[in-house]
Length: 527
Image 1: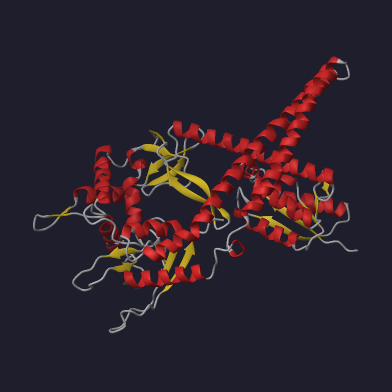
Image 2 (image 1 turned 180 degrees about the vertical axis):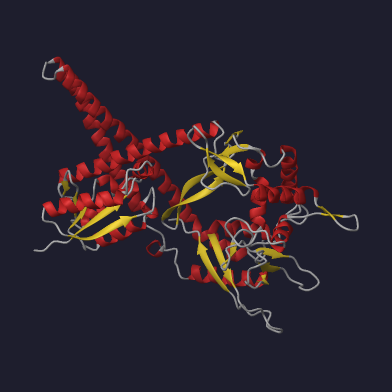
């Protein structure tokens, strides 16, 4: 019977570093290697899956996702790869997904050194152990890379990929690494931004006009100054410039850290502010005097404190939840005024065409959506719309038992090796080699044991969240019109991840209550 084969090609971080040193295109070399192997063994490769993006997990590797979908569908009898580590170097979850996809579809994994039959018990263990060891190697490389970055930061070098506006990134002469060089015309704009924000601008009548971030963005657009990567300035860009300590000659690293969190059944990356960060004197020249920078930070803090007056409290129950579908900005509340007797939800981007709506209409539509969502489900366990977490816990516990059993076996073998040495069965050299092998196996299994225990604790936490989710929505619907806006906002943020708002036509006279807008609601489902 004719068998169908494909090949999967992916660069590792080491490959990318080697290419920068002149080693040539990795994917081309690997393609040639696998093609030669296939020709020698009379294998016809029908397709090459080439991963050109970098990703530590399967979620960040779209070509790998496509390959796994085709493998699960039984499209291929075998997959050729330079080494099994190219398939999965992520966490144990990713490794399990890859192993199960090949096992249950009975798809062979072929490397130039070995062919793996996923339904052969010994090949399966060898394959899983290879993936596990590759994960340990990945963590070692990553730690080494982070140490190198921190060493560069401590030396005052710039290790970011994109320089701040006002600087260009340059190679340090006769040394490794990069620093920053001032771009004079851009630096002058940066100084003007700080001057406008901290001191304002003198007017012909002798008065001083104070500028906020939005006004500075509009002023720069009006005089034809353009930022580096867009057509217009935004107040967020101006705020980032005002907060960037690089302009004072400092190097700051780790102020925002990347964390991995579960979201809608996937692991996603989020950036969160950290109080524990590195701040050292940089090798680059300063554009802004530290005293002026301190004034800007003081005013930014004052403006932040004045956003919500203590006397009135939060007035927008949708604050931080609703986003403009057209431009991505967070929608804000416009208080009642002489023109409108009601609060309005509007996009703060002055160049965006999204039309505003009364907040009470958006609330009405949102509550209607939540009520329909709640009505479509029952609290009966058979219709709960969540993943069967108890099954996941059982699977993890079974895996933990297997790891513990393997640990006991290897520890017993470790004890037995001493006896074999004393009886002269093992030479000292064989004993030492055996000891090292067993110790590595035990160390890896202990790490796996800790990871699985952490996974079980996390799933228990998710199960608790699931049990609380529907009661939270029911309570919100029952008490929404008697709660304060601040209380409603707090509960909404517990059950909703984000809402996307879009409206193209304004309401005509006499049609104020017409909900001619669309809301895309993304519930914060614990998964």
